[in-house]
Length: 431
Image (cartoon, rainbow, N blue to C red; front, top):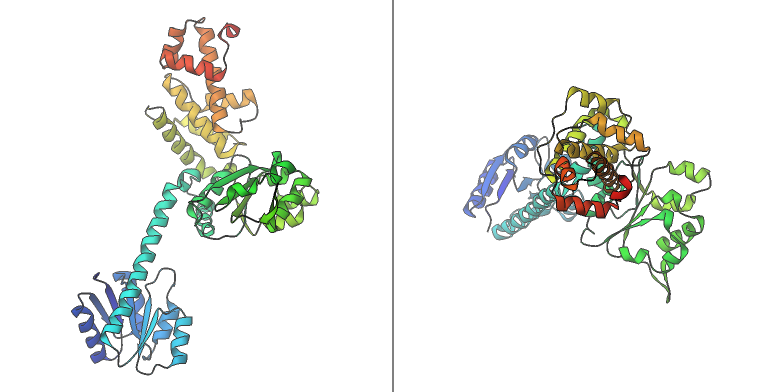
């Protein structure tokens, strides 16, 4: 049996001492108080596993103490009273008490109730710790790096909404990390062992729905991306699929057990007003809403987030992170970041790739965006575009001498050949 810590609150000294003696005889720890008003301070100081308190006391009663505690974080409360009756016991349980014991009490029964209450509290503490650890493993801090109040609020909302089965609509500009947030909601929720099935609504077809597209998320999470771009005929079917049942070649069958998350980079109300999004579908999808801030609205996070991505990319390429100069910081702050965090991460990786060659700057990495216009939609495509241009320039500069090209790029000849094939480069066309 574990050595639980019990906080005893009773204004009767003899009863208080008797309870403490019983608890210590069981091999547990006991702390005693004569006034319930002192309990809050002792709970914060000693972190007991369970509170055993008398009901009728001068000043703050046991029921008052119960009502004053935060049910999410405070230890369970077991009430004990010589004046107990069924209505009082019912009221105590309804107000959140773990149990109610009448005086005179059975020592074995009292210890049993205290033990079970302590075990329940221990499990709650463990679950909170696991939840905190899971938040780290899910990458919330990596996905939503930042110290501004807005980012702290978003991270807290994700943790709060993860356990809910309700539909969540994630709003935010391109590159703010909507799908990553949806994955975090899945990973932190009770369906994390099930699939995370993402669908691009802009490319959905009626045939795709009839083939059971939603069923792939059964037991897990269905993520509907770019919901405002969903074709009108698909929106009607999608609404019916979500609300009623899934269509299949064999006919209608019960809707799969899944949670629906969706995302849009548009104002959904505007999309409804313009007739591009059904209001009843929006109503079904936006039970809860998360709005992700753009990078330009939180300039205090830019340098911190960039440094984080710089270190991440440097680790992947096995080099030391390049140090940021004053010019680099000035370039970061002067840029408008239309591609948001996705663009910021892409620029950080370019800086690391440049650093492998012993040169480069934030301004030079940003110049590629200006030269090529819109930021590629994914980090992989952005890096591929950068590597394609970098290798092409090196081939031209060294007139096709591949050993010299590989040396200039700081990579092995074999790696260079693999990249040329992978990127679809035509050496002859470059010369």
